[in-house]
Length: 418
Image 1 (tube, one colour):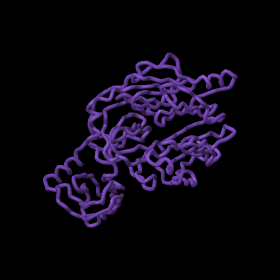
Image 2: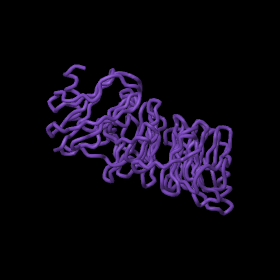
Image 3: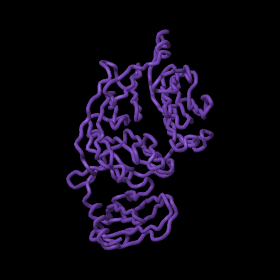
Image 4: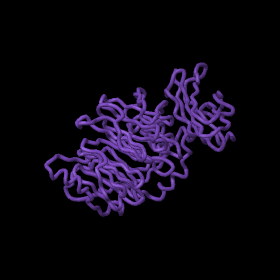
């Protein structure tokens, strides 16, 4: 790589702010008068579904008009004087799953509904089904509770725990990998389809979702992300703002979904709530702001929808300039993460990831562009690597780490203290 190109990367690392700002605003969507707070939301290219505590709604025109599609079997249950409630939604192809207080309701076709209770009569707090492999969380208030699992062609079977409130299946390997929040308030992971569950002791705060980025699963927590199913966690180096010359973090992640080659995430620091687009190491600020925390995201018919902390539904027409951004996103797993700790004294760790085998050159430069150290130079197999740099013998100040491999270049700014 030419020295001029290195210097450009250094300038970007020093002076770049948090990305592009498009200035688009949310539009509130009213499904029906006085329907109550919206609990959950899922979308496809054809349809959008939303649930309140008492009803299920469907829209086929990006939220302009809505149809109340509350299952008659659920209404019959409530007609017998029992207290009902809708808790969660999930889609697996055209199969729609609805977790309710009476149990799990399923329609094999979300266009022409034909409902059945696939599990009853216990409260289903959450359900996630991918490619026919399903995980269901039953709260402790039912006669049966814990994690239940199903495989293609089989029914639901008890698997783990005495209570559970959340489940997330890995979309790329749902037969093996899933995550759950149990009644002991801990998060667990299985890598063998539920035969064994282990606590995620290093999880940064709370689990949010698993997004697929260029055919690689990215596990997203409220304060970090992982490309290896939660073994190694990294922070979000690009989720930062720029305020009076100092970078600052825009709080924690509140919602995340996969979107084209990247993902959309919502973040909050209790003062500002933002939406970002990209891959974890390179997020673009869409310019979208909201006064309330955003707890759910969904995309349908080129519109982004979110449910706010107040239970209101909002819509944003995704502009063409955003929909084309995914072409600029680097392949997932091809990244240089922000060093940790930063600032540091005297040792810091730099992590990078390669999706394919190839030559890698990782160098350290002074603020003037002079190369002062080489941390990696040679052929590496695909995977994630961490390397330490010892700042002993170097002056305090700003240094730039630059990675070069094939056509991929990236730089980060590091601050050495004394």
